[in-house]
Length: 300
Ligand code: OGA
Ligand code: MN
Image (cartoon, rainbow, N blue to C red; front, top):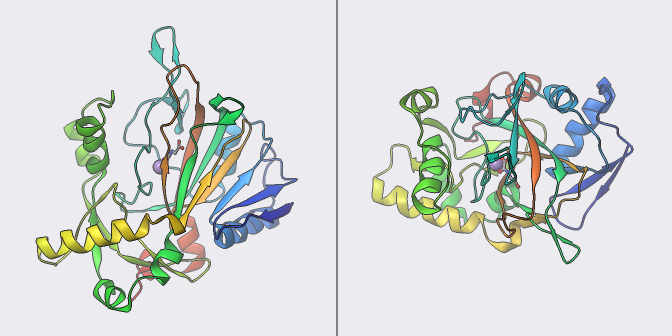
C-alpha cells in the first residue's frame, strides 16, 4: 500500500489496498497509523458489498447501529444509506445527513473513532463533482487557541446531545426526517466528554467540541458557557483549518472523528443523485489498544 499525502494538514490517498479483501494485521496497523497522521484517508477505486464495507470497518472497533434506525442495509443495520435518490416513490436513504458542522457520535457515551463512507454515486455538474465533504482539523484548531482559552477549557467537559442536530434540521432546514421518538431520545441521553482530548494513537491534543451536538460547558455559568462555546465554534470552523474533499465514484473515505469535525455540502439538486453507504466505528478498540480506558482521553 502506498500513502500519498495532500497539501493540507488533513488528507492522504491510499493506493494499492483492496478493501474487499480481509485486512492483515500489518495492513490494519498501517491504516491506524496513516489515519493518525493524516486524519482523512481516501481509498480510490474500490468495489465493495455492504458486507465487505462492514467487515473492513469492523476491524477498527465496534460498529454503531445509528439511533435514527432508518435506511439501514438489509440484515446489516450498522451500514446506513445516505442518499437523495427516490426509487418507486420512496427515498433510498437519508437525504440531508451531516449538513452542518458536527462530529459523529460525540453524543454517545462511547464516542466515534472513525467513519467509513463508500461512494456509489457522486453528483456531477459540468464535469465537476458536487456534494463534497468538508473537514476541519481540531489538532490545528487546539494548537492555535489563545493561551487564556486553553487555560479556561483545560480539564473541562461539555455536554453533547444527539437531539440538538436532529431538531435543528427539522426546525431550521425543513428536513423531511421524522421527529425523534421518546425511545430514541432515551436511547441517546445527553453525555459529557472532555473539551480537550489526547489522541490515543498520536498523543496530540485535539479540541473536542462541535456546533452540531455540544450544548454547554459543564459546571460553568450558562451565559459564560454560551459565549465560550460561540468563540470555540467560530474558531474551529475558520477556513485555515478546513480541508474540502471532492468525491469520485468508488471512493472509500475514512476519517478520524477524534481529530476532525465535518459537514456535508448541500450544493446539488434533487435530480443530481448522490448515494453513499456509511459505517460508524466506535472508539472502543482504539482506546483499549492505546490506553486503558476512555478517561485517558481527557487532557488536564
Ligand atoms: C456522515 C456525514 C457527510 C457526507 O455520514 O457522518 O456527515 O458528506 N456525511 O455525506
Ligand atoms: Mn457526520
